[in-house]
Image (tube, rainbow over all chains, first blue to last red; front, side):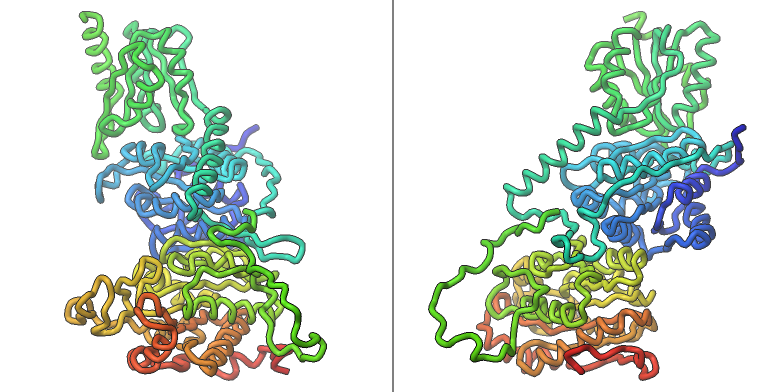
Length: 356
Length: 284
């Protein structure tokens, strides 16, 4: 029988990092995810692992760069303003093809914003954030269980593709307590000896980690190589969850915390006789465009629900490509919509589209 | 990553000239360290970087630590340092070398880790990372090249630019009432308890080169003691951006640079802290 623990999302993520064999964590305190550094500062030394409170997020992401470049399983976590500071380092990490896990416990912005949950970092996470052509694999947990599970998945995908993986959580999923099971985990064997800087033995040439290719001809070759990798990721790593889509006439599209709220809204709507389903993207990059395109042949309308001013809705529209109306409903500033509020908005939209 | 060159034309051409004398008639008194990559460098004539690269690689060769040394290159003229040093290296973002080195060293405490940074990299954009790494006493060696200008972007004012010195962004000379005085990095960092050995050297004369070599050798030899950070500041020649000939640049260092940046050890380890350091073969 499975053994469950009651834990905060941030702590479950920290515990999973230890179980996943994370060699080093570098971080800087910021609400609402300071528990991660606190938990690991207490627990990592017991496992002979490295944990360090850096002088800034700029430093912590570059410590991740150094440790990941030496071939170690490495992670950092922060919240929105801190993740903004890391964008330079993330771009370098992507350019130098270093595997690592970065966790953003999203709070509301812009600027210092507030410490309450938000999903305003969607564009930053999936469309770049830092400079240059790169992509991160972006995983969006919707429960404390997934905050733990996606640590293993995130590390494994990072190693598989030699690419940074971002877990995009939020202040609610990070702070709330739920039951969590730490499932048995076998770490895939990955050979990093061809590139990790561990010291050059006589038997091989030197390894160096860089994102610099000053000749445009070489830079383009490197860009094309990265793009080929992102193509592989798009083809192989799309993950999503569907609930009640088989008979759905309408569809909620929501990730993370919004998806949790939409699940309740879906129950209320179905009691009222509205056949609505939910598609929850688990990977925000790569995005489930294809499945949305298929569902656009089945449903009459989609409603993207987000804790922002309407960011993911642009990707839903890309997938649907004009086949059916794609609407948006969101709250901002750390405010969360109630399920009733969403259903009310849904009913209004159905009526509007029926009349027109 | 392969070891191919980024911007370089390749190995220097071999000239098939007949030898003047049979080779066995001579005793080998000087050779390029085996830890250097045999290639042409991109540095300007009279530049200090190529010389200091060689000194570091001589130290790595003499200590026999090629297999256990990891270097961190900066952004600046020496961004291509890994094209010349035949060791594993990482290229850091501008100013972040000490954070990158921290990540490497903390995971591999028994390896030799050094950063190679210019004045813009270390003393402007990266001073926070540098100061905190030294304050933590990271067991790394920081080689700090101070030539008082931004070299790669062609001669802008640096945090170490001398008062009144003309650069492309201080065309009327550095006005200290507007930009402050040059930062004396070695003196500043020596105040931190984490600093184990701090020295300032130059490479504008044969004697200066010998002293710099000795300083670098010590800085590397202290690393296994795990006693703290070693910082070797080196006053570098930058004839191109100083608009001087190499000879004038060497003279400029003696006559102007050293007034602001006096040479010598600023913090030396206590005798009992370094008694375990074994002398190298060459010293014996």
